[in-house]
Image (cartoon, rainbow, N blue to C red; front, side, top):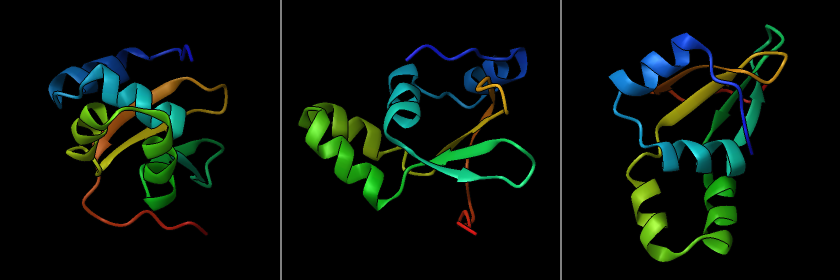
Length: 93
């Protein structure tokens, strides 16, 4: 899945040391939550990890499991806006 990445997001990926393979797994299998500003937040949750377990091998799953707190924000046009590690729960209102 090819996603347009903003310059800001590219900088944040480098600054935060996010593995591109893990980011791709997040965008492909993560759960999307509406951010109430027109975009969406993509996070790993239990359902996302169950989907990952069925889709990828064990070695890659261990690699992704180290980044369970990773999140990504997409804009209304689907562009990746930013990436980070969350320290608080993302509410699914």
